[in-house]
Length: 206
Image 1 (tube, rainbow, N blue to C red):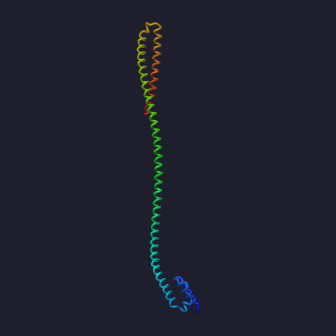
Image 2 (cartoon, rainbow, N blue to C red; image 1 turned 120 degrees about the vertical axis):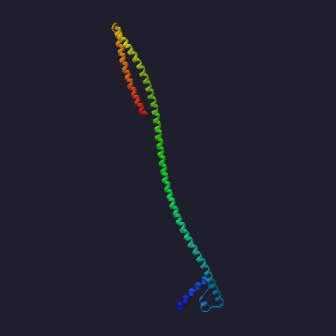
Image 3 (spheres, one colour; image 1 turned 135 degrees about the horizontal axis):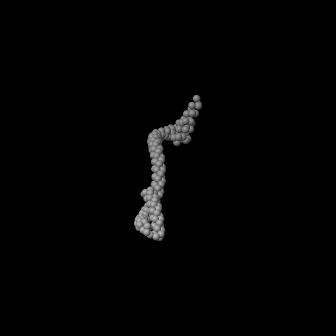
């Protein structure tokens, strides 16, 4: 029978200590005094009021805690969404950078090709100018040789008329004129071939 009383005293003593009455003894339970009992009862009542007030604060704190956790969850979701958007933006930016680098490389390659084409066209223009000049020079040479050929042909006809009654010197001049005529004809043919070759090169260059 004493064990339940001891257990009750221990719990009551602990309660009194919590309420601020650390001098609570077994005597207060066996033979309570009015003055001490009032003070002890007042302490218990104050503790219960304090507990009630604290309970409200605890409940309010729990509500605020839940609200904070909910806000934290929402912020966490927003952060995750922002991180995902940031990753997408980084990947998109990286793709754009690669496209830009590729476009710049293509532009440089095109610039190099254009520069090469410009050099080639300049070389072609120079070569075309030289070929046109050569063609005109050959044309002038052929014209001059044609004039010389006509003169030699006229001279040959004149010498042919005089060959019957002329001495050997006339015959020699005739033979020389004929040989010169053949040489001029061959030179004209050679110049014509050179002129045709130049014209062909000129067409290929253009």
